[in-house]
Amino acid sequence: MPSYSYAVTIAAPAAQVWQVLAAPEKWPELTPSMTSVRGLAGPDLALGARFAVRQPRLRQAVWQVTALDEGTSFVWETHAPGAASRAAHVLDPDGPATRLTLTLDQSGPLSWPIAFLLGPTIRRYLTLEGDGMKNRTEQPPSR
Image 1 (cartoon, one colour):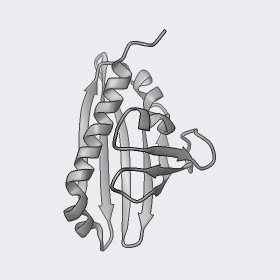
Image 2 (image 1 turned 45 degrees about the vertical axis):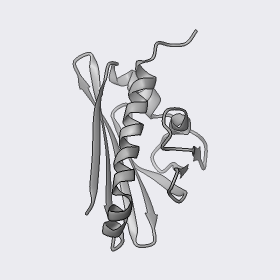
Image 3 (image 1 turned 135 degrees about the vertical axis):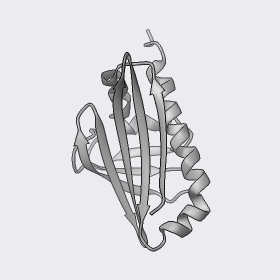
């Protein structure tokens, strides 16, 4: 099963990082790896919530939140013919900072061909997303 991971330390408390992480519709403002994220029943991150995600070079996918630990982590999943993807977003306090870990696991008969074709893109997107969260969270509040 192909698996990808990226972790970054953010100079902010977990509650502040969670505010950015828990607003997926705003993620396209943080990273060029997403062109749009739209909640299909509203913008709130909640168990069972579904989001239509458009990313450059990838087909639109509908991701459903399958696990949620408010303020700490969430998992969402998407399915396509021959492959399923599971993405986890985890916050770990690290002193006055927070460690954000993003993982993407794929399964199914087409997961290895997808890894061969898109592995570098997936790794780059995870890095862009983690670094985008870091940059947004560490910015001083606008006045």
